Length: 301
Image (tube, rainbow, N blue to C red; front, side, top):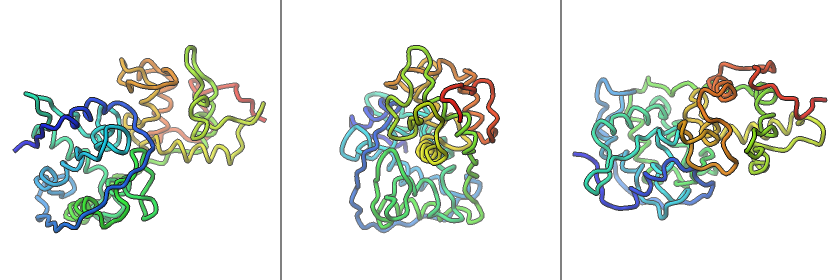
Protein backbone atom coordinates (compact mmCIF):
# COMPACT_ATOMS: atom_id res chain seq x y z
CA UNK A 1 0.00 0.00 0.00
CA UNK A 2 1.56 3.25 -1.14
CA UNK A 3 2.08 6.08 1.29
CA UNK A 4 -0.41 8.76 0.25
CA UNK A 5 -1.79 12.02 1.56
CA UNK A 6 -3.92 14.72 0.07
CA UNK A 7 -2.68 17.54 2.25
CA UNK A 8 -1.43 20.44 0.16
CA UNK A 9 1.55 21.20 2.42
CA UNK A 10 3.42 18.15 1.21
CA UNK A 11 3.07 19.24 -2.39
CA UNK A 12 4.38 22.66 -1.46
CA UNK A 13 7.25 21.04 0.44
CA UNK A 14 8.16 18.90 -2.54
CA UNK A 15 8.13 21.91 -4.84
CA UNK A 16 10.45 23.95 -2.60
CA UNK A 17 12.79 21.02 -2.05
CA UNK A 18 15.50 22.57 -4.18
CA UNK A 19 15.44 25.85 -2.26
CA UNK A 20 17.96 26.31 0.58
CA UNK A 21 16.73 26.08 4.16
CA UNK A 22 17.14 28.53 7.00
CA UNK A 23 19.24 28.21 10.12
CA UNK A 24 16.28 28.71 12.45
CA UNK A 25 15.67 26.22 15.22
CA UNK A 26 12.44 24.77 16.55
CA UNK A 27 11.52 21.91 18.82
CA UNK A 28 8.72 19.40 18.57
CA UNK A 29 7.50 18.07 21.91
CA UNK A 30 7.61 14.29 22.17
CA UNK A 31 4.83 11.96 23.17
CA UNK A 32 5.13 8.58 24.79
CA UNK A 33 4.73 5.66 22.41
CA UNK A 34 5.32 1.96 22.45
CA UNK A 35 7.11 0.63 19.39
CA UNK A 36 8.13 -2.82 18.29
CA UNK A 37 10.40 -3.53 15.36
CA UNK A 38 10.34 -6.98 13.87
CA UNK A 39 13.46 -9.00 13.32
CA UNK A 40 15.57 -7.71 10.44
CA UNK A 41 14.72 -9.15 7.07
CA UNK A 42 17.50 -11.13 5.48
CA UNK A 43 19.20 -9.63 2.46
CA UNK A 44 18.15 -6.04 3.15
CA UNK A 45 20.56 -3.10 3.35
CA UNK A 46 22.52 -3.40 6.62
CA UNK A 47 19.95 -5.93 7.77
CA UNK A 48 17.36 -3.19 8.22
CA UNK A 49 13.65 -3.98 8.01
CA UNK A 50 12.27 -2.36 4.84
CA UNK A 51 8.60 -2.88 5.64
CA UNK A 52 8.96 -1.21 9.04
CA UNK A 53 10.89 1.60 7.37
CA UNK A 54 8.12 2.15 4.84
CA UNK A 55 5.26 2.06 7.34
CA UNK A 56 6.83 3.87 10.31
CA UNK A 57 10.06 5.69 9.38
CA UNK A 58 9.39 7.16 5.95
CA UNK A 59 6.24 9.04 7.09
CA UNK A 60 8.44 11.04 9.48
CA UNK A 61 10.18 12.64 6.50
CA UNK A 62 6.95 14.24 5.26
CA UNK A 63 5.51 15.10 8.66
CA UNK A 64 4.07 18.60 8.91
CA UNK A 65 5.94 20.72 11.45
CA UNK A 66 4.04 23.99 11.50
CA UNK A 67 5.17 25.92 8.43
CA UNK A 68 6.71 25.88 4.99
CA UNK A 69 10.08 27.55 5.55
CA UNK A 70 13.29 26.41 7.21
CA UNK A 71 13.13 24.27 10.31
CA UNK A 72 9.33 24.49 10.44
CA UNK A 73 8.88 22.43 7.29
CA UNK A 74 9.15 18.72 6.53
CA UNK A 75 12.46 16.92 5.99
CA UNK A 76 11.56 16.32 2.34
CA UNK A 77 11.55 20.08 1.69
CA UNK A 78 15.35 20.15 1.93
CA UNK A 79 16.55 16.56 1.82
CA UNK A 80 15.93 15.36 -1.70
CA UNK A 81 18.38 14.09 -4.29
CA UNK A 82 17.22 17.04 -6.38
CA UNK A 83 18.41 19.43 -3.70
CA UNK A 84 21.69 17.53 -3.26
CA UNK A 85 21.21 17.03 0.47
CA UNK A 86 22.65 14.03 2.36
CA UNK A 87 19.41 12.22 3.21
CA UNK A 88 18.79 11.82 -0.51
CA UNK A 89 15.01 11.37 -0.59
CA UNK A 90 13.39 11.02 -3.99
CA UNK A 91 11.04 13.92 -4.85
CA UNK A 92 7.42 12.99 -4.24
CA UNK A 93 5.24 11.79 -7.11
CA UNK A 94 2.15 13.83 -7.98
CA UNK A 95 -0.82 12.00 -9.46
CA UNK A 96 -4.55 12.77 -9.53
CA UNK A 97 -4.21 15.49 -6.94
CA UNK A 98 -2.26 13.30 -4.54
CA UNK A 99 1.45 13.27 -3.67
CA UNK A 100 3.23 10.13 -2.54
CA UNK A 101 6.23 7.87 -3.03
CA UNK A 102 5.79 4.86 -5.26
CA UNK A 103 7.09 1.47 -4.16
CA UNK A 104 10.17 1.89 -6.34
CA UNK A 105 10.81 5.36 -4.92
CA UNK A 106 10.41 4.16 -1.33
CA UNK A 107 12.97 1.43 -1.94
CA UNK A 108 15.39 4.00 -3.33
CA UNK A 109 14.75 6.19 -0.28
CA UNK A 110 15.44 3.18 1.93
CA UNK A 111 18.82 2.59 0.28
CA UNK A 112 19.79 6.26 0.65
CA UNK A 113 18.62 6.58 4.25
CA UNK A 114 20.52 3.39 5.20
CA UNK A 115 23.76 5.20 4.31
CA UNK A 116 23.20 7.45 7.33
CA UNK A 117 22.69 4.74 9.96
CA UNK A 118 25.02 2.58 12.03
CA UNK A 119 23.34 -0.58 13.41
CA UNK A 120 26.51 -1.51 15.31
CA UNK A 121 26.20 1.71 17.34
CA UNK A 122 22.78 3.27 16.65
CA UNK A 123 23.28 6.45 18.68
CA UNK A 124 26.16 7.50 16.39
CA UNK A 125 23.95 7.38 13.29
CA UNK A 126 23.86 10.64 11.33
CA UNK A 127 20.12 10.13 10.85
CA UNK A 128 19.69 10.56 14.62
CA UNK A 129 22.36 13.15 15.34
CA UNK A 130 21.38 15.84 12.84
CA UNK A 131 17.87 16.71 14.13
CA UNK A 132 18.89 16.24 17.79
CA UNK A 133 19.76 19.24 19.95
CA UNK A 134 23.53 19.67 20.46
CA UNK A 135 22.80 20.18 24.15
CA UNK A 136 21.97 16.48 24.43
CA UNK A 137 24.63 15.23 22.02
CA UNK A 138 23.29 16.13 18.58
CA UNK A 139 25.11 17.80 15.72
CA UNK A 140 24.54 21.10 13.99
CA UNK A 141 21.72 20.88 11.46
CA UNK A 142 20.87 23.69 9.04
CA UNK A 143 17.22 22.59 9.14
CA UNK A 144 17.01 23.26 12.87
CA UNK A 145 16.32 21.12 15.93
CA UNK A 146 13.43 18.65 15.89
CA UNK A 147 14.25 16.75 19.08
CA UNK A 148 15.32 18.28 22.39
CA UNK A 149 15.69 14.87 24.00
CA UNK A 150 16.54 11.29 23.10
CA UNK A 151 13.19 10.44 24.70
CA UNK A 152 11.34 12.08 21.81
CA UNK A 153 8.99 9.57 20.16
CA UNK A 154 10.50 10.06 16.68
CA UNK A 155 14.04 9.60 17.98
CA UNK A 156 13.15 6.42 19.85
CA UNK A 157 11.27 5.00 16.86
CA UNK A 158 14.21 5.56 14.53
CA UNK A 159 16.74 4.32 17.08
CA UNK A 160 14.88 1.06 17.58
CA UNK A 161 14.61 0.55 13.82
CA UNK A 162 18.36 1.11 13.41
CA UNK A 163 19.12 -1.23 16.31
CA UNK A 164 17.10 -3.95 14.57
CA UNK A 165 19.68 -4.09 11.78
CA UNK A 166 22.68 -6.37 11.49
CA UNK A 167 24.85 -5.63 14.56
CA UNK A 168 27.98 -6.16 12.47
CA UNK A 169 26.89 -3.50 9.95
CA UNK A 170 28.78 -0.29 10.58
CA UNK A 171 28.46 3.30 9.45
CA UNK A 172 29.59 4.28 6.00
CA UNK A 173 33.15 5.63 6.26
CA UNK A 174 33.55 9.39 6.58
CA UNK A 175 36.12 10.86 4.22
CA UNK A 176 38.75 13.16 5.70
CA UNK A 177 38.42 16.59 4.05
CA UNK A 178 41.88 18.17 4.33
CA UNK A 179 42.24 21.45 6.24
CA UNK A 180 45.57 22.46 4.71
CA UNK A 181 44.16 22.21 1.19
CA UNK A 182 41.23 24.36 2.31
CA UNK A 183 43.52 27.00 3.77
CA UNK A 184 45.86 27.14 0.79
CA UNK A 185 43.59 26.45 -2.18
CA UNK A 186 39.90 26.77 -1.28
CA UNK A 187 39.67 29.78 1.02
CA UNK A 188 40.93 32.31 -1.58
CA UNK A 189 37.81 31.60 -3.66
CA UNK A 190 35.80 33.61 -1.17
CA UNK A 191 37.52 36.90 -2.08
CA UNK A 192 37.98 36.22 -5.80
CA UNK A 193 34.57 36.51 -7.48
CA UNK A 194 33.94 35.83 -11.13
CA UNK A 195 32.42 38.44 -13.46
CA UNK A 196 28.82 39.44 -12.63
CA UNK A 197 28.93 37.75 -9.21
CA UNK A 198 29.56 39.07 -5.73
CA UNK A 199 32.45 37.82 -3.60
CA UNK A 200 31.34 35.21 -1.06
CA UNK A 201 32.44 37.55 1.74
CA UNK A 202 29.60 39.89 0.78
CA UNK A 203 26.98 37.58 2.32
CA UNK A 204 28.89 34.88 4.20
CA UNK A 205 31.46 36.93 6.12
CA UNK A 206 29.94 35.91 9.43
CA UNK A 207 30.36 32.21 8.71
CA UNK A 208 32.79 30.47 6.34
CA UNK A 209 33.83 33.45 4.19
CA UNK A 210 35.70 35.43 6.83
CA UNK A 211 37.45 38.45 5.23
CA UNK A 212 41.25 38.31 5.42
CA UNK A 213 43.29 40.99 7.19
CA UNK A 214 44.10 44.06 5.08
CA UNK A 215 46.80 43.25 2.49
CA UNK A 216 47.54 39.95 4.21
CA UNK A 217 46.52 36.31 4.27
CA UNK A 218 44.25 34.76 6.87
CA UNK A 219 45.82 33.68 10.13
CA UNK A 220 45.66 29.96 10.85
CA UNK A 221 43.07 30.58 13.57
CA UNK A 222 40.87 32.47 11.10
CA UNK A 223 41.21 29.67 8.58
CA UNK A 224 40.33 27.07 11.23
CA UNK A 225 37.19 28.97 12.15
CA UNK A 226 36.14 29.28 8.50
CA UNK A 227 36.83 25.59 7.89
CA UNK A 228 34.72 24.54 10.86
CA UNK A 229 31.82 26.59 9.51
CA UNK A 230 32.16 25.38 5.93
CA UNK A 231 32.25 21.71 6.89
CA UNK A 232 28.52 21.91 7.69
CA UNK A 233 27.88 22.67 4.00
CA UNK A 234 29.95 19.68 2.87
CA UNK A 235 29.04 16.00 2.78
CA UNK A 236 32.53 14.40 2.95
CA UNK A 237 33.10 11.95 0.14
CA UNK A 238 29.92 13.00 -1.69
CA UNK A 239 30.38 16.23 -3.69
CA UNK A 240 26.94 16.00 -5.29
CA UNK A 241 25.31 16.02 -1.84
CA UNK A 242 27.26 19.07 -0.69
CA UNK A 243 25.45 22.41 -0.54
CA UNK A 244 28.79 24.17 -0.95
CA UNK A 245 28.94 22.94 -4.55
CA UNK A 246 25.21 23.02 -5.20
CA UNK A 247 24.17 26.57 -4.28
CA UNK A 248 26.53 28.53 -6.60
CA UNK A 249 25.84 26.16 -9.55
CA UNK A 250 23.46 27.40 -12.25
CA UNK A 251 20.04 25.68 -12.21
CA UNK A 252 20.44 24.67 -15.86
CA UNK A 253 23.39 22.54 -14.71
CA UNK A 254 21.50 21.08 -11.75
CA UNK A 255 22.17 23.78 -9.16
CA UNK A 256 19.85 25.45 -6.69
CA UNK A 257 17.10 27.73 -7.97
CA UNK A 258 18.15 30.49 -5.57
CA UNK A 259 21.53 31.96 -4.73
CA UNK A 260 21.64 35.67 -3.98
CA UNK A 261 25.33 35.98 -4.73
CA UNK A 262 25.02 35.00 -8.37
CA UNK A 263 26.33 31.91 -10.14
CA UNK A 264 29.94 30.90 -9.96
CA UNK A 265 29.66 27.80 -12.13
CA UNK A 266 27.52 27.16 -15.18
CA UNK A 267 28.51 23.53 -15.57
CA UNK A 268 29.49 20.66 -13.29
CA UNK A 269 32.50 20.31 -15.58
CA UNK A 270 33.84 23.74 -14.58
CA UNK A 271 37.54 23.14 -13.67
CA UNK A 272 37.22 25.03 -10.40
CA UNK A 273 34.18 23.04 -9.33
CA UNK A 274 35.84 19.78 -10.35
CA UNK A 275 38.89 20.67 -8.25
CA UNK A 276 36.64 21.33 -5.25
CA UNK A 277 34.78 18.06 -5.85
CA UNK A 278 38.09 16.22 -5.78
CA UNK A 279 38.88 17.84 -2.43
CA UNK A 280 35.49 16.84 -0.97
CA UNK A 281 36.07 13.26 -2.15
CA UNK A 282 39.26 13.26 -0.07
CA UNK A 283 41.53 13.10 -3.13
CA UNK A 284 43.30 16.44 -2.58
CA UNK A 285 45.45 17.39 0.38
CA UNK A 286 48.35 19.65 1.24
CA UNK A 287 49.26 23.13 0.04
CA UNK A 288 49.89 22.38 -3.65
CA UNK A 289 46.97 23.85 -5.56
CA UNK A 290 45.75 22.76 -9.00
CA UNK A 291 45.72 25.46 -11.67
CA UNK A 292 41.99 26.09 -11.24
CA UNK A 293 42.57 27.04 -7.58
CA UNK A 294 45.58 29.30 -7.86
CA UNK A 295 44.92 32.91 -6.79
CA UNK A 296 47.15 35.91 -6.13
CA UNK A 297 44.64 37.54 -3.79
CA UNK A 298 44.95 37.84 -0.85
CA UNK A 299 48.73 38.20 -0.75
CA UNK A 300 50.64 35.73 1.37
CA UNK A 301 53.12 37.13 3.85
